[in-house]
Amino acid sequence: MCTDTNHFKLINTILPKKKNLLYYINYTTTSLDTLFYCNCLWTPKPKATAAAAAKVKNSHTHNKLFWALPLIIFEEMTDRRVYVFDEVARHDKRGDTWLIISGKVYDVSLFLDDHPGGDEVLLAVTGKDATIDFDEQNHSEEARKMLVGYYIGDVDISTLPVEHEDTTEEAAASAGIQTFGGLVKILQFLIPLIILGLALALRQYKNKE
Ligand code: HEM
Image 1: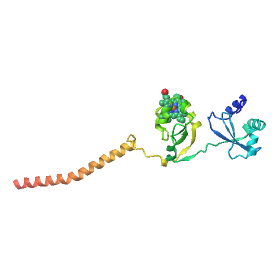
Image 2 (image 1 turned 60 degrees about the vertical axis):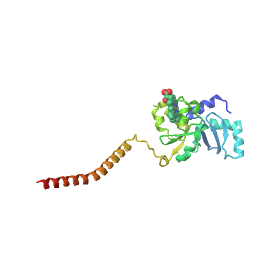
Image 3 (image 1 turned 45 degrees about the vertical axis):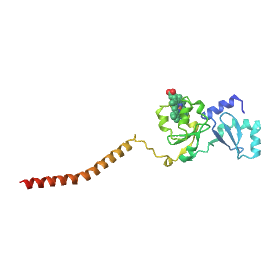
Image 4 (image 1 turned 90 degrees about the vertical axis):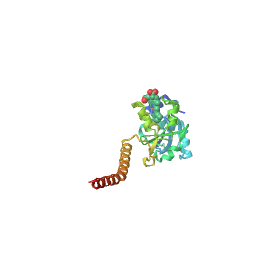
């Protein structure tokens, strides 16, 4: 664990304040691949060789890496990809809490206790599309900026379950079409009856004459 406050300052100026996001450091000069957390906890990249891992543990290399930060390329290593809805839906519990907001998938497992709106609301929408719930709360600009820290990928929107709510304009229009269709069917049945009734009435009238 790095305790040098300068390192914290440096890291915070370079990177957005993201919690527990892993960054891949492509340290071009030594081609030393390693991972570190924003909280300054250094961990060798799993794939890194034992020799590279040993180098990272060496404090000299550690410092060298840190001060070279502005020169190195960061790539987020959070395995960002496109998830099908069913996969998101499986992460629906405390400690494994994913949700969807505007087509993006967020892992809020570590945010539950920090959420100003409480953990219950997040748990209520875990594994689901929480777009409407999120928007309904009129979250501040600050809250929206925080989203990036929990972003892990996108959801394939074609896999989202079809909503059955009839609140949308489309649903209202389709309901209108259905009502109209019903009316046409009734008229199709009634019109021949009316014509028949009129014909009979006319015949009776003529017979009377
Ligand atoms: C990663 C996703 C989310 C983040 C980063 C987030 C962040 C925040 C923040 C910073 C606040 C404080 C008020 C503000 O600045 O707007 C807040 C309040 C709140 N949030 Fe969230 N939120 C998230 C998801 C959600 C979801 C999905 C819901 C609903 C299901 C929700 C419901 C609420 C509620 C009820 C409050 C309290 C509002 C109040 O007391 O006035 N949040 N959230």
